[in-house]
Image (cartoon, rainbow, N blue to C red; front, side, top):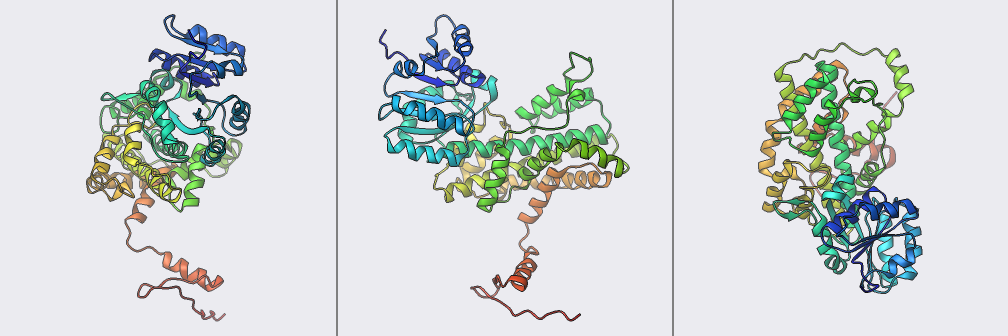
Length: 473
């Protein structure tokens, strides 16, 4: 066999990198991987089926030299400086026309910088969002490629082969120009943060408010996963609630700390949404609640100082149904906010993101895959330039049919002192978005009063300033 024998190279043989390579090998591609850790290189070789062409390299030069032209190399290393370090190492080993892919969770601004830098030396650079975790990487993830369209056409057969399939369609599509791949993945993760927070609030209402056991909660979430709330996150919630702890024999969920971790992609979504002027309050609150969870000691002291209010919630089938419907309502609002950010960012950053394709890619393999995405597919088939899904008439009916439930749940939680910040944010966003008039006219007047920032009038165009009368003491 020729020395140029491998179809695809991977730099970084952690769980994601090695599983993705093995997935490619199972699809008939000859693949090579490189890692600084010799044990990971050996583990890759040992994990491959005997009839597959897979090789782990400890020598980067040797691995790059073994790839067919144009070379196709993916990096799956931590975001930030490690990506730049790898690029600096390999750029002299590549030829013009070769393709380098960043498959990690890089910030889109870094991706855009790298696209431009690699373009100057004739190398195609793509940022690709990959969702599905280690299991998805092995059996079929959701893949969100962006950047150089010509480069995508070259790697498309590989990506389509390894992606998750829904109704025979691979969950991969070119999502847009520049850094679109990583931007779409960032927003995916922001929506993921929001939905996880909403589910945790629903769980807490049922557990703390209705005093249901973990076995009962497992049955409830399992039942929810059979209907319109069917999704990966609801499915794993049901599984988590039945898991026993190997050490104590009790429910594992009871032994897990309530201090939540994060890797920053939710925060990135909130930060960029603020820069874009797009409100995403559910995602904002999800990030804030993870931050607040870290203040465990202070929360313990506050719990003594500010004693909890009286719980007024009782276990009834009606209450469980209300929580289900409130969660459904808020989940729709979470998707609405994330997709509205994609719509706006696509225009501002000139990424030409086709949101209908993004939704199709999210239907399988990714963390936020859900039955509801079928409804979104229909909405964008009717209008692919929809700035916000709340403006779709069919979806509007679904939202309104669950409005009463979320109002009841939020009110009950507030009266009982149970925090449901994301549900409250969903309801407030809904009420504000559907309001033709908001009290921000007063804010405009205040800004002009103390800072001469001017305001707009309702009857004529232009900007105006008033010499406001001072209040008499």
